[in-house]
Amino acid sequence: MPRILIVDDHLMYRKALRGALESHIAKAHVLEADSLESACKRLDPDGCIDLSLLDLSTAGVSFEALHGLHECYPKTRLAAMMALATRADIMRSLDAGLYGFVSKSQSDSEILGAIKDMLSGRVYVPTLLTKVGEATNGSGGQIHHLSPRLNRIEALSDKLTPRQREVLAMLARGMSNKEIARALRIAEGTTKIHASGVLRALGVRNRTEAAAVAKIHLATADSPSRRRS
Image (cartoon, rainbow, N blue to C red; front, side, top):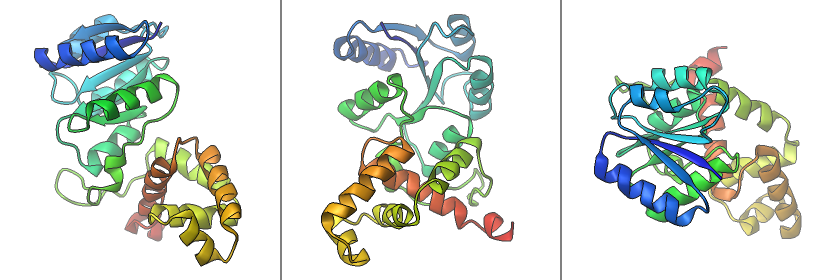
């Protein structure tokens, strides 16, 4: 029986999300909190809450607070929510050690799918990451630091074979199996084998998520701070 905590100070949204989760996730036990303080009263270091969804506009909730919650409640999967998200917001969520980021602008089915993914132990990488602009900090500059989560992404990508890394780079560009096969001069069936190996190695569900992970890795590797190091 999955136990889910929704932390959001908007009563209507909180109730609507709770209803959707209870209707679409079998035996889900959903709790609510309207502030960070009330959320802490619900959370337990022993992990009695499987997943906590925290809206970043709620009182007390910030990326710094989320990082602290991750340290205090390591057995609970944490995910950030926001009405309007940027690539920077998503990357900062990964930086805080979260299991994912849910944009309230996503469809109901996408949000439910994201929550189910995180409950199953997957890190949710929203397709939004492949559609928005370059990551920026609050002043509009690019983010140049490497997060622990990004370091883990790098470590995983380093385990890929040279051919798999080529395939991953082409997935990031949105190329089809046929296009990749033509570019690498290999059979399309061989391309599918390499692509499947990439998905398994990165622990992602599909090509879209693999492309998003690849873009994070490539953007970070190409940042000025990385080139100077």
